[in-house]
Each structure stands twice: as structure tokens, then as C-alpha cells.
Length: 382
Image (cartoon, rainbow, N blue to C red; front, side, top):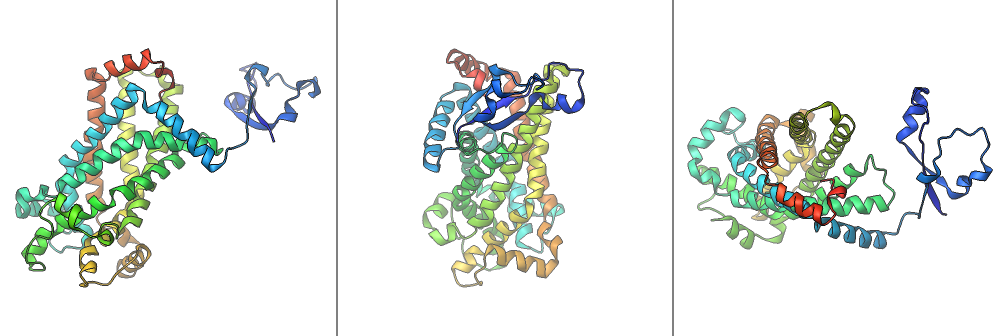
């Protein structure tokens, strides 16, 4: 059945609040109801004929995917989007380097190491590891860069795809974010597993659990580790990233809507600060809510090598959740949360400050000019 959109527009801003609330809403109506001659003379003048546009029914899966791919390709041809994709990927990789020692500590806390058991143990870990603490960073850096770049094109694809499937504008950022987040989690699983083994093998050497390092480098680990080891903990990692990106894109879309409506009340510097701080807060909140999946991911990746070598029993995501809750109750799913919060505060601080520095330094100006010359700027929502 053909359908059409009709926008309500109140002619009198002094009318009741219930009418004013309709001024920016759209209703999806059967086309038959939009036959204006059949409407009564007493109907309020809220249906603007110029704002009625026919729209087809939602497309099928294959057609939606094809059209979404084409739209995302056009969007990614925008020089400003390309610049922001590279900027975001680079900043995430730099932030991962700055926070990597805390990341190693978080891995040890989640694995239940008795010496490195909380955030206060950071000085002990730094003293014991020294510069070997950065041995597994290339894996994290590569993952951070890859996911930072994938987010831009991937989000645009899923945003277009779910729009064609009829997902409302308000919730679509969350659905699209969860979709690309799950894919990023699956893509990141192999290097994340290698990083976890490399973060733990230094303490395993000191404790005599292994005689030599399992992986001499990230490249060695990526090449030598088995398929089962690489994807042993893929499920909780996918859940973690899907939930995180679902929240991150949703919170940021609400923040952009607020700044679009109320931005005239703030100076340009104030809007930039609100946007940067809101971006950081969204990341920190998302990392807190999805932490149980991060803990389960950390536990499973910590035991993955021992499982593959027959030194520990195999577990699943739900089995690990049950085990943690039997041992420590529901609160056990949040063991190590302060360490994760410190990690993400540092990451999003570096990313947020980097974004603001790029804006203030004029790095984006050239991309904006090229984007405007190609007619993309009016459509940019990144």
C-alpha cells in the first residue's frame, strides 16, 4: 500500500502546548487519507500540501542493502567525511597508546591476578613490566585504527539500511550503532586475543606457568595462533562493542539535536566544548553500562590459551557469567570497573581534546572547502 508523510505545522504559536508539540512531528498515513477534498472544512490548517511527499513501502533486505551501500559510498566520497574518518582512526590509535599500560592492568584485574588486583596496583605493574608493558600495543593500535575507520562508512551503511527498513529517526542511531559495533567486535577479536595473551604472559613467566613467551610479537601471535584461539571470546566482545556503540551513537545524536535547536544560545567555543565534553561523557557512560560483557570477554580471553592447550576446561559466554555470579554474586560482574573507567576516561580525554585541537587548528578547513565544492556539506551529519 502506498503511504505518505504529512507534517503538522501550527499556524499560531500561541496555541495550546499539545498543538505546538505537533509542529515538528510527522505522521505515516495511508495515501487515501491525504485526499484533501474529502477533509472537512473544520479541519485545522495543520496539513501543508507543500509538505506532503509520497513514500514507498519499506524495501526488502537485498534491495535495502544495495541502496544503503550506494548511499554510503556517495557519503564516503565526501572529502570532509574522509578527513574525519582518518582523524578519528588516528586519534583512537593515539589514545590507545596513551592508555595502554592501564589496559594491561585491566586485563590482569579481570583475570583475577592476586598482585595486580585493582587500580592502586598500577605502580607495581609498571615497576614489574617496565617497557615490556607496551609489547602488545601494536595489536590494540591496529584494532583502534581499524575500528575508528570502519565506524564512519559502516555507520552510514547501517543508518541508510535501517532507514529503508522503516526504523524511526529517533532510534535509528542506536540500531545502526549496535549493528556496526557487532561487526567491529568480530573483526577485532583475533588481535584482541593476541593482546590479552601478551599482556598476561609476562606474569606467567615470572610465576613459572610457562617456560617462554607464547608470542614474541603481535605479528607472531596473529600468524601462529589457531582459529579457535582467535575467536574463543568473540561472542562477549561482539556484545560489548554492540552495546557500547549503540549507546554512543544514540547519546551523540541526542546531543547534536539539542545543539541544533539550542545552539543559538551558545557561542561557537561553548558549543565546541559542550560537544567535546558530551562526547567524552557518552563514552564513559557507555563503557560503564557494558562492563559485564567486558569482564566476561577478559576472563575468557585470559583462559583461552590454557583451554586450547588442555590446561583448563572450556567455557562459554553464559557459562562464564554463571561462574562469576556463583563466585561473587551479581556485583562480581563489575569487578575492575574503576580500572576500566580510568582507561576510558584517558582514551576519551585524548580523543576529545584531539578533536577540539583539529577543529581549532584549521586542519579540517581544507577538507571543508573541498566538500563544499562538491556539494556535500549540506548533507554531512558526521
